[in-house]
Length: 272
Ligand SMILES: [Zn+2]
Ligand SMILES: [Zn+2]
Ligand SMILES: [Zn+2]
Image (cartoon, rainbow, N blue to C red; front, side, top):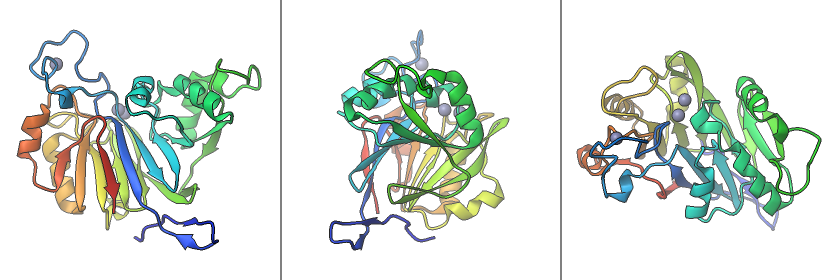
């Protein structure tokens, strides 16, 4: 599969740009530390064990695309000085991936424009049911509400010159979408990749993969299962994300092969 990123430069020629990923959040659905927990990871003084809810910002060709809107979007944006979001792509409508939608209103206000959002029909249906005011024709001015334009994704979709290809993966009792963007794959909230989706995982440079704890979970990979899949896909680099308080950053990092890393909030990587 070839890299599908291209954009037209000012001379009118097609150029290929780099794709950069900023990890805004790398935590499981409760975040780490977890409310009321005194375990060694939640009490840890290592800042790499502070994990907000999972989301990444993909930067290319001067654009910034948010993948999922975590409940921590406001603090993530402040910490990482994110002052523009050109589009949002949703993997699935679980609360830890969509509850930051209301925070998008500040970006509408700053950018003085509507923000396109992308998702499969079911994800958009749930989001529009949860945040009907973000799509209404009323009170469109000021900071009062997000102004979002829904775009239904049924297959490979070009977003500012980057082809985004969703493919189905199993997430416990429901299906979720992993996203292929050129040679970057974002595959979180998954406990099994069906054989028919494995073709999307050929020739991957950078794989971001969810692993909620060491042991397998009904809806998520465990660390060892994620490593088995990484071994099969053989990306140049892989980063584990969506990590719970069952995982200490330093311990996990010391256990991983050299091309696999534990991600952390604020990490920035380039896709080759
Ligand atoms: Zn999740
Ligand atoms: Zn804990
Ligand atoms: Zn989920």
